[in-house]
Image (cartoon, rainbow, N blue to C red; front, side):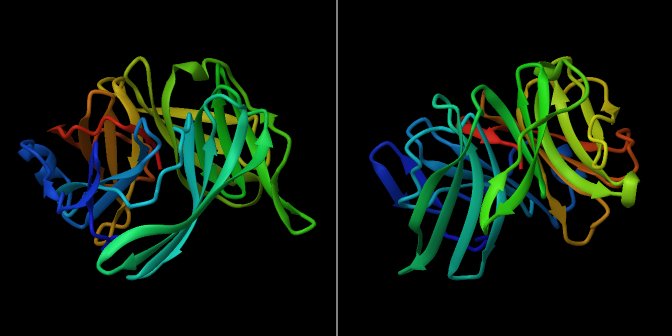
Length: 293
């Protein structure tokens, strides 16, 4: 998929055009993030067309595939699986419907046809009810985390008679999850009773924070502030990968105004945010609803 031809989304349809552009005027952000780092996020335009916002090799791009219109804009979205090569891809995703209360499993299949990527098959099937008001989904297979109102819930992915399903929800510790703007699965660590899922996100008071949720006893949640201010405006936060810096991570933040920022954390496991560097990429026009990945 990384080699896919980018398409420019315009009101009259889609015209093939290169939309990989310089990352922006923020030289500090570019120099602070190694060129081997890449990070992207899924987004949906108001008409239901899916987009991808990408930061890679110190450039930004918007990608869209023909026939990739869901018909509605998820209130929350999370990719749960994918595979592909230079000529095809498959992906499976969770999408919470904004009005009917259902969580959907969205399946997509794409192919490179005559030099242009297009989605050749897609489906959206109802998976589980009870997802009204869902703001955030974060997948840490076999677990799915969900934020609704002031609460955080966890579901377990299972197969019943060879059919993929989700367990009843477990309400996790704490209140005030309505003050969490973004929440994204970062990694898992530890073993046995000490195994944890680590999630990263931003809050309304401007914090960049890390949460550690014990897998065996998910009501036990520890959190740590990585940065105390400056992160309140982000409505989407995604983490990525650095090929030559595997211990680090890039962070792509997007604001509702279309301004994006990129940062680099040299050691993602230390629970320290003082070494996070980067800054704004400027106004990129990324105003479709984006989801942390």
